[in-house]
Image (cartoon, rainbow, N blue to C red):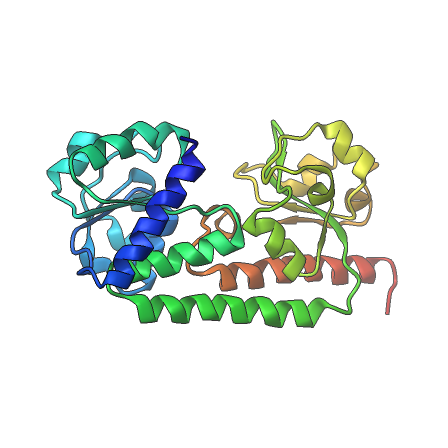
Length: 286
């Protein structure tokens, strides 16, 4: 069964459990930093008994918890040893065997997709309900939706710069169509060029395509320590380079599709429109 179909089945079973009023999970292992952040945001830290290594590195509140391994190679023995009644994860091909083995041992596995905005919001509500924090989850989701509506209204009448959002420089990966980041770019008032050209959410792109697309704005969220402006200056024909519209975006804005997407949206919008204002000033705009 394709992993998205399996994830849907597990998600539907979890929702059914919430409707039946099953007792909340009390011992949870989180195998994804966005899910870990969600539990912390919903004031459900007390139910966490173990996390993946990356969660422990980026989430200060859980650094003292037992670690069960990497995102894609967690230890089955370490997880089972914590005696969880729920393991929460984002589906991946690497974890398919782990999910099946946990289910075979009678441990509930909550599989939560996080590619699209709708999936991220659903994951917050489903996970919140499963740990007895449904009201807090609904409040957090409504805060995100409210921020989206406000941002869309604020930028509706403004010119939308032709932009790309860079996730990795070499090889070049951009934000394409259908991801929560694509939705975020639109809400923040940018026109995502890669969304028109690539159906997949995070496509690998040739530099020749970027030169042909000629973005007016490059938002660089790569983890490279080298200056974004200096890197993209290697292609001086790019309009974004010519007009000083290469902007470094904090990696945290793009890497954790979790409970604070409203804050991430605000950061992205400021980056987009600060660049537009700066470029206008440099060209002598009023």
